[in-house]
Image (tube, rainbow, N blue to C red; front, side, top):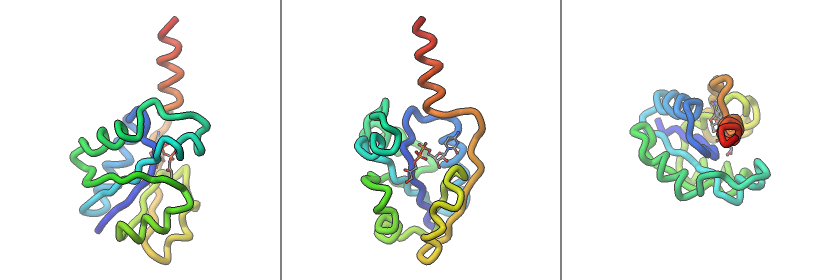
Length: 131
Ligand code: C2G
């Protein structure tokens, strides 16, 4: 069962790791679509702290990630799911319902987000440390 998930995964943290680990456990291989720097800017209004190259390298180093690819556009999700032959799309439940349209080509499963941790909050904490 091939699992696909998508995300920016900037400044990889425990919430990301828990998502990826649980996604991997739902099947026997996990592919991760990593948002390009441009897509990240379009999605979040800021360029990521870690470049797309670095974010892909970090994810590739995880034993429960089998492969990564660049996610260039949110609108190409159907294309990616078909191209990479996903059996299941897994996302955190902040996306609950947003990808149900793909249930015609693969299973869609949403996992509980890990509370009170985010890249944005980590950036804020680090900024505070400077003073
Ligand atoms: N996540 C989580 N718990 C957190 C933070 C994130 O479970 N505390 C999950 C999100 O729900 C998402 C994944 O980790 O499934 C990646 O999160 P982001 O890097 O913030 O990715 P996002 O901006 O949601 O991009 O095409 C979809 C987008 O690329 C998803």
